[in-house]
Image (cartoon, rainbow, N blue to C red):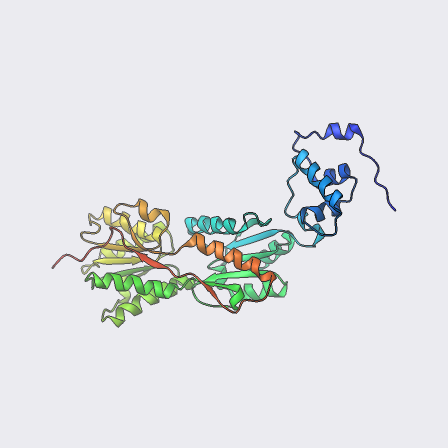
Amino acid sequence: MTVKSPVSSKSRAALSPTSGKATINDIARLAGVSKKTVSRVINDSPLVKPDTRTKVHALMREYGYVPDPQARGLAFRRSFLIGLVFDNPTAQYIVNIQYGVLDALRDSGYELVVHPCDSKSEGYIDGIRRFVQQQKLHGVILIPRVSEDQALAETLRAIECRYVRIASIPLDDAGRMLVTHDREAGAEAANYLESLGHRRIGLITGPRRYRSSIERGEGFVDALARRGIQVSPERIYEGGYTFESGVAGAEQLLARPDRPTAIFACNDEMAAGVYKAAQRMGISIPGELSVVGYDDSPLASQLWPALSTIRLPVRDVGRQAAALLLAQEGAASTVTTSVTPHLVARDSCMPPQAG
């Protein structure tokens, strides 16, 4: 039997309760137990005697020790870290996803780490694989566009990493997917503008490499076609999901002799760019131009007039994706989790002027 040497008063003095420098090794030494036993206490393992558990918890409180999520995994050979992997130019979307994930992780013992990447760069999948393996992640949440990459999903399966993909259409097993139904939302925007009487309608899409851009744009165009309105290629501008591309797209569309009376921008940042271009050109919103965005980010209600937009509850998306990832410990889900966007009509749309 191994007997731990007692901790000297000098050692206790060097590590005062107010120093804030306690580590898992310090707690183990002060308690006279192994580092692995402290990790078991942190993880509520039943293999620890009640008196040992009480002693370790008391020392953690006394010395202000806060467990490192990676150290927590010692007893179970895994970390308590959830990764968020993204390649998305929309800052507000990323922020809201993170808030939602953190909502779900609160009081769970898991922490969030983020990994921005460039999906156009060579070897980006290898970079994500290294991130997962070096951090020993419990699992990862993939958001568009990386969530749409089948090669990345196959790599994660090969290294036995749990994951959840957020995408506009089902791309994987039900337990690994959260679907946002972007095509239906694009159709709702089209139906709304047509119901107001608009016939000359412009469209500013996101990049074609994003599945969300394809789904939103095609859903919009197809819905108008069903109502007898054709959107010619000259009235479609491929943007980049950025404010600047919204400005450029609107300037091109509004410079036409038969300029549109309404524009659907496939996210709110590009819609804000439409506002900027219309202001420069002396075109009033909504008097001469109706505008619909997508996401219902905080920006939508801050614009004047307030922007009509498709509300995608992004924070809820993040929350549900994290909950789905944590649920992968149990039986596999056979029902795909989904979030349905809907139109929020504000002040940026009205029937077109006569003539």
